[in-house]
Amino acid sequence: MATKVVMAQLSPTMEEGKLIEWKISEGDPVAQGDIVAEIETDKANMDVEAMGAGVLRKIVVQEGATVPVGTLIGIIAEPDEDIESLLSEAEAEPAVVATEERPDAPEEATAPAETAVPDEAATTDEAAAGDETAEAAEEPSAVVPPLETGLEAESGRVRASPVARKMAAEKGIELGTIAGSGPGGRIVKADVEAAVAAPAPAGRAPSPGAIGVSEPPAEPRLRDERVEASQMRKAIARRLAESIGPVPHFYLTIEVDMGRALDMRSELNARADGFKIGVNDILLKTAAEALVRHPQVNASWDEDAIQFHGRVDLGIAVAVDGGLITPVLRNADRKGLRRISLESADLIERARARKLLPEEYQGATFSVSNLGMFGIDEFTAVINPPEAAILAVGMTQEKPVVEGGEITVRRRMRVTMSCDHRVVDGAIGSAYLATLKEMLENPLAMVL
Image 1 (cartoon, helix red, strand yellow):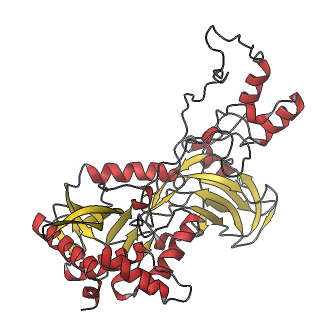
Image 2 (cartoon, one colour):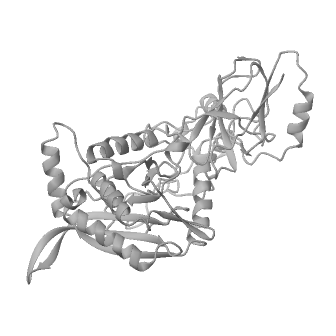
Image 3 (tube, rainbow, N blue to C red):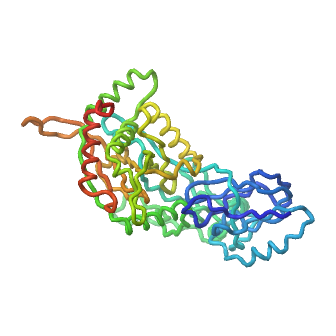
């Protein structure tokens, strides 16, 4: 019996997916459970598993295409089985949202289709760091990724389609000299054709008085470009629109003396025999302990009721290429600093390698976003519904402070909490931050 390969909904917010790669070709045999394709969702890259056995009879959606959830993207059937009725269904489906040029596909948009049952191998990316003078941020929450061009910054490899590479080689054109117009600055066939047709730029004589001044580059350093948003970026756009408008935000900021917390960290690391506790580990532990003492903040608005959560599941905001994801540290209040450090480091590393599973980035009850490692002194973060609050952490820096009528230098950090006013009132939020401050300034308070 023929088996449909469809674009499956892999998260509650997923509305469409992008077909990154077919792992097999038409006519190849398929066993149930084989990985047949890879798709990009709003949160991760996922492998698609065959739900039936047979032969990949038809690829309905080509690589690079974006299609709605539920769209047919391929058909698995016996070699002599009639699949015309399934193909007729595919023809009746809406058109593909977007396609990327492929050597084995027409250069124009192909027919619509979607992905099937994923083998949950996920994506994402983030950084963690920290230093005793400006270390108040080890897991940044948001980074503006650099604009992608045809040249990949990390590897130095030019991004180009196989067709474009072949044509450039035949015409003797260096790909690095061509500006790509494809997704993410990828060089496509049309770019090479334009480069072939364009006349070589003529030299320019220096203007009077310009002796000793270098000439500006012949080509502009910036260019107009419209790049298709990734599934993650589209999901972020939807979620922010759902949050900052409908959710009534208000913000509370407090400054914390981090001297004792940093001294404790140094002492713990000196005794740890190679194991290191990070500043962010201390922040996560403190945030979790404070939530236990103020359960009103560890809650969500649920239509006409407030849902109090029996677990403290912390979302750790992690910046990844093209977006943001929040791996969840489960039961954070029940874990010591060492375990928090190990588990959060593992989550961040697998986020960076795009290996998080859906259950590892969904269902947080409260989130922490840290931008201190970027030198950010203070900022406000957008609440991730249905959570009622998010903590935005700035950098730790030395500041002059008046103590006992004298000026002294202390290591200070500013923390801002964004609150959903339907759940958290000003007094409740202020009490939570006061407890957080007390614990960070007197770390032994966490064990009392």
